[in-house]
Image (cartoon, rainbow over all chains, first blue to last red; front, side, top):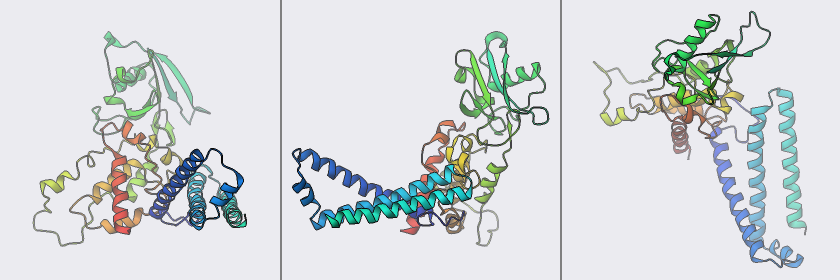
Length: 115
Length: 234
């Protein structure tokens, strides 16, 4: 048993499952977006803004933003523990990733509800 | 043919270097890489390598031949030589003791972690613990591992975290004991593996499968461990 306190959920199995579940959400959102853009080639601002006014779309988008945050955290954490060996630098990198992720989530929420 | 071999004697050399030697293969036969090493040693007795059984059973002469890990004793030249040239290097990722001899300590430490022996807390029967042929068949493809380290040293996850990731070889063995009907410590064994490194550093790139000289499939065993963990935790 290897102890780690900076990973997403402490348990390898939990991280593994979150990584898979969030990947499915991201895939669904990507497919939806590609489909929507293909089916609406003459998309204008009003229609685009209208799309994100619906509650369902906001839930779907927020779910995707949170999924992306969790997915990115697990991925970046793995990369940092693979390639950055000095503990101090690794912790700094992980902190920067965490801060950036938090900023993106708040910013995403602001965009989603602020428009 | 041209043999380029990794040479490093820490008592004499400042840094490792590649030594190019021309070797004439007697009778042009398709000899094994281990025989080639003997021909090299005849020319230059200072060359060091491990070998013992010379038939792919002891797992001593694992090395990197033209970029791929394998056992020198059961790898014919025709399988690895390209353009009449072969490059011989030690197993990647492990500290080099001398020439192609590596320090296997980290590899064995990971093996030790998985408790590679039967754990059973029930009273011992008068003669032996019996298995049905089906239960015994569960161990096929697992017990054959000879611990040559070809798989673990071909795995980038093991290169980056040899102290935390058990590695394909150790995990194949871990599943060998998880799958054994005579072992009663399944729960404890699984609990020891459920961290972000021991099992889950495996990203399924299957280098281990492609190099295993015994034709075993550690990736499949790792998948089975993951399924056992999932079944227990969901």
